[in-house]
Image (cartoon, rainbow, N blue to C red):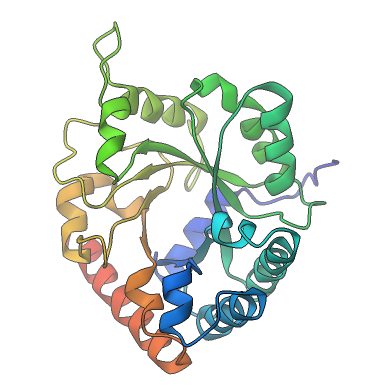
Length: 284
């Protein structure tokens, strides 16, 4: 891949999108139960109808879409083809795409994952990718390097909203620092000097309560799942994220998607969440 010397970094593009459209990220999570609630079959036709409806209804008003790759991959090559079209349609409409694939491995395998989602020549090229650092942060180097070259970004699992995550992320190293805090420190180093915001973000759950013991000021975005169906609200964001709340990208999936397939209802729900988030951030 030959990078363009004029490529705009993901952090810059995300900051612009958040400032102009608000920070809301809407998941595209076509699991079987949700397809059924929309009156769709759990098949390729249902998958495509679902994804196309979400993009068409919301692409002009949200900053970010976050498709969950697993819900497409379960259909094999035909599902991947739908995912490719979904990513292309969303990006063509001006919405940033964070691919939620949570990839993580070492060496050439990590490099191949990076090429799949972070190389502009790939049909699955996305603006950013979620990655797992639990083979050691250094294992992410191929993804970090390619993201820098292509102007893409990463969201590294740091303090996730699932209860099981704590046994790893809150474990204490020999130096007295937790694993989660270590990941945040690595990201702060990646983003040092970036303006207006770095391209290397963390996944930090909005349901985690007081996180004042962690330094969330990484000069990069904080992807925050948990708003809506998982129990957190926009009003919780300032208390959870403190001074870093302006860089939070709250993710809502079921809270918006349950209103489909009616496009107007999807839009109304997304607008409500976006307004609530704006007010919460402004009041912080």
